[in-house]
Image (cartoon, rainbow, N blue to C red; front, side, top):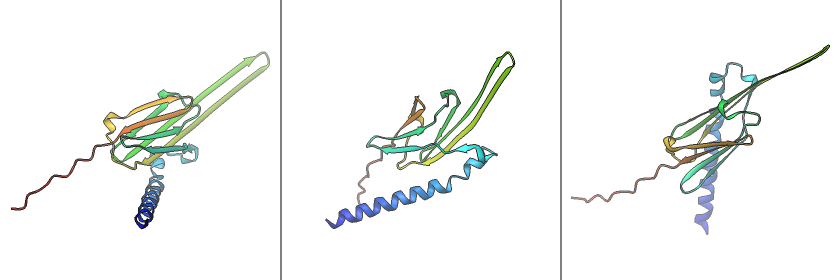
Length: 145
């Protein structure tokens, strides 16, 4: 029974370390976007299975052509820009609306992944990125001579 407590404490420590790594990566948005005031951080879920890490991000109002995804073995970076202009003219009436917003998020992944085999889909404002895990090599026995 006691080892389960230590396992849970280890998981909590790993999650807190991950949260701090994500917190320290936030200034990277300033490098990408000089005007940080308009940058929104999308809500993200990170799920880990035996074979892959699945990241789901909410990017409402974005078209898939405006989404940029960069991945390394340990991080996933998502950015997007929305630029829209609407104009309506009638006799004696002019309405013009503009929308501009940016999304940016950099996530530290819970396991090492193979970014070259990642797949991304975007439907109804939700981006899903599936990153296959790198298979851990099994240890090799070494004979002592």
